[in-house]
Image (cartoon, rainbow, N blue to C red; front, side, top):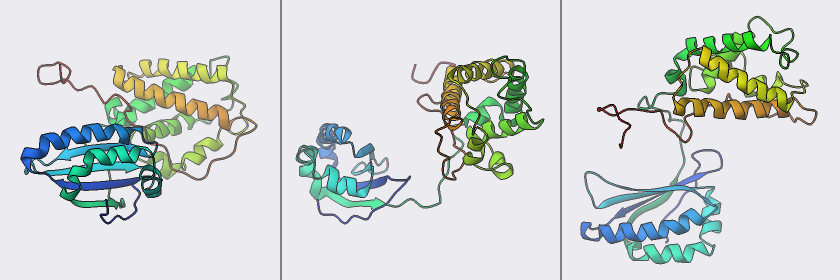
Amino acid sequence: MTAPEAATTVTTGTTVEYIRYRIPEERSAEFLAAYTRAAVHLAASPHCVDYELARCEEDFEHFILRITWTSTEDHLQGFRKSDLFPAFLAEIRPYVAAIEEMRHYKATAVRGEGSAVPTPYAWAGGAEAFARLTEAFYAKVVEDDLLAPVFAGLAPEHAEHVALWFGEVFGGPKAYSLTQGGHSHMVAKHFGLGITEAQRRRWVNLVQDAADEAGLPTDAEFRSAFLAYVEWGTRLAVYFSGPDAVPPAEQPVPRWGWGAAPPYQPDGDGDVDGD
């Protein structure tokens, strides 16, 4: 392939390539079959993050292949010079002449999320829900024999700040960042605490109990996302509270999404979509 290419990143360290095809409708079935076979070699490449072949709804002859690479160099010097590329090219070679564009694109600052899928923050009930969560949680913490020493001398506003943190993490307003700081600020609060695995596990258990008391949603999709963050965050807390911790570079508050399971949405009949 010799179409012009220009490097880009959509997220740190990745590159997105778009290849636009014009395939006569009578050849579309064989084209899709060829790419189904070729995709096996894409998926096997350690340089391929993901891929998707889309077909135009208004004009069935137009197709766009999107491939996310770990970098442009990895695509050109890694995949194309690997043992996988000849087999990939053999499958799609009959359609190379149908390529109208093949380039990499740089992402701009114009990006965001729509409202078709609610954030975990909105799904949980917003600021009030997370305020109830931290209030219930810290009421438990101060009476817990294992965790009380860690939170000795807790500032009165601590629970409120953690509620802002949770809210921002799960897709709410950037209130913690604006009033307290970014991820590094939260991490710094754990330096020198020497949190043990037993204390971490108790923290996880108590915050789940607090979520029940606070009336956070109990659907499997929300709770799996919630617990995934809790596991990630508490394990970082253990590391950063230890003697070998290396303070992280300045970085924003992490944003946590739904993960593997999107929010449960019943269809018009009250059943799960697709059932």
